Image 1 (cartoon, rainbow, N blue to C red):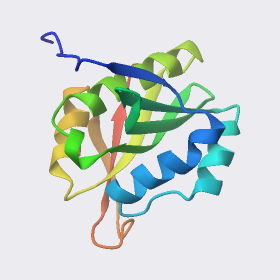
Image 2: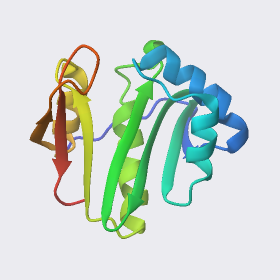
Image 3: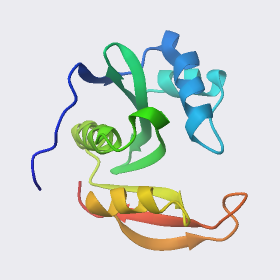
Length: 152
């Protein structure tokens, strides 16, 4: 894979519990079914969860999270603020998320994505995920594709 341009002033790190409200607001602007601040606080504090954020010049620009355990990583949410899309932020976040999951002995990863979310599907395919199933009526307006990365 070619080198990925990293934006100036870019940082990825774990989201702190006091940043749950900011993460929730970012999700509301990007996801059809965002998690609430209280749900994100519980998630951030869960020892089996990894929840990362990308920051540009100190401002949260994207998030992604997963449950990591029993050899598997279930990616639960990925969102990038609209004005920061197409800057490789989601790609970099997911790569870091998978690195962290691997440190926790995860060997494979999976996620659900709306079948009509073609940019996300292309991104996941670029990372090596393949469609392995379908969940009818999973989202309000579409089915979900189950995508799996067989080896992290």
